[in-house]
Amino acid sequence: MKLSHFQFNLPSELLAEFPAENRDEARLMVVNRKTKTIEHREFKDIIEYFDDGDVMILNNTKVFPARMYGNKEKTGARIEVFLLRELNAEQRLWDVLVDPARKIRIGNKLYFGDDDSLVAEVIDNTTSRGRTLRFLYDGSYDEFRRKLTELGETPIPKYINREVTEEDAERYQTIYAKEEGAVAAPTAGLHFSKHLLKKLEIKGIDFAEVTLHVGLGTFNPVEVEDLSKHKMDSEELIITQEACDIVNQAKVKRKRFAVSEPLQCAPLKVRFHHKEP
Image (cartoon, rainbow, N blue to C red; front, side):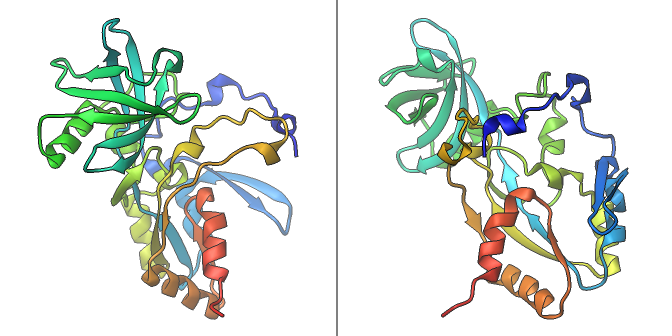
């Protein structure tokens, strides 16, 4: 399979800069495999495709404000730092992406905030844009995490060509987000509203929650023509026994189940189809 097979024209005017006023009124394309037809509906109509006892699997990961801006020591150059994952809480080590990367080398220090109260030192190069930072902050670990939240921005995608707004902190998050750890929202789940979930519950649909923290792989561009040579980054997936029981019981009863995110499909297929020896 080649990268060129996926080239197509996507007019910029078709990319929404802001979400629909109501979450569940986003567009929904329905592909009927039996009749080979396509319908264009609203997301809230999804309730028509599920029955009593079916299961909806929700990804309860929570996005944290991962995009920060700092200034390089001496030159004062503005540097974007995108937090990917915490490597060591005690030493305050983080995997990050930096932009522009060519300006950031091992040993450089970055200063954050109007008062430079948070400092980070580059201690390693991981990829062309990847760096390992050691944060220096005069405070407890909880105070340090609050400082990251204070200085960070909601990491809306780069293809959304506008400034971050206060509303993004709430809208770029699913209503069932619980477990912090994602650097990007599980976007399909953004269309579920509280009202829609309640209607699904009343209809008898069961819910199973899993945690899949969206990570670096979401931002890594595919730069090789042969897709088999593209290197994917790992992501953390947590599936509880309770979630397994809900899904497996539905399978025994020959009920249907669906995932709220395409990203969940492959790992869940492996887990729920696995049989102990």
